[in-house]
Length: 153
Image 1 (tube, rainbow, N blue to C red):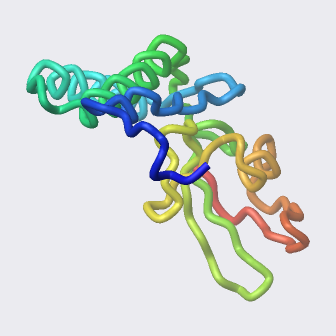
Image 2 (cartoon, one colour):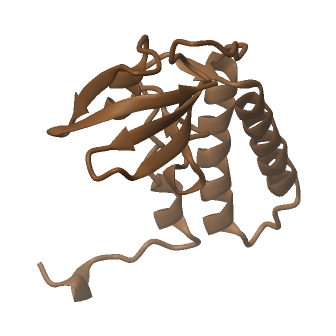
Image 3 (cartoon, one colour):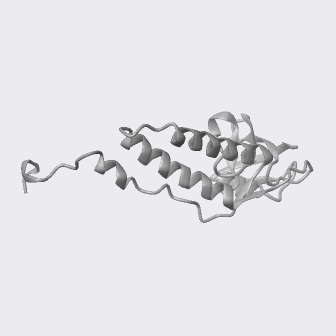
């Protein structure tokens, strides 16, 4: 059928059907900083929802969806106190040496706070999983490349 004969939604009804944001099947481990980020996002979204005007249907749908996601993530958050040590674990900052002699430093964090561009990766990522439980001097293979742990804190 031609789109010319299909009734268009009125009053922003198309925005009411935004799909839910998917929630990870993994435990929601968070660092203290990650928990603070989630709390701040929930507060920001609650403020944004309170400030909505009646004609802001698209914004209302998006804010409602995002608020449901972040509220669920806050409710499932499991705070993990970061303990420095010689073994890579959740919250560790790790420096690795690649085969081409390049070094990379990153922190292993919760899924919602991970931002590889800023030097943090999710604890469920293949690299973090390969390194967890290992120590300085250990080598692991990830994506067909061998890497060595040169520092952990």
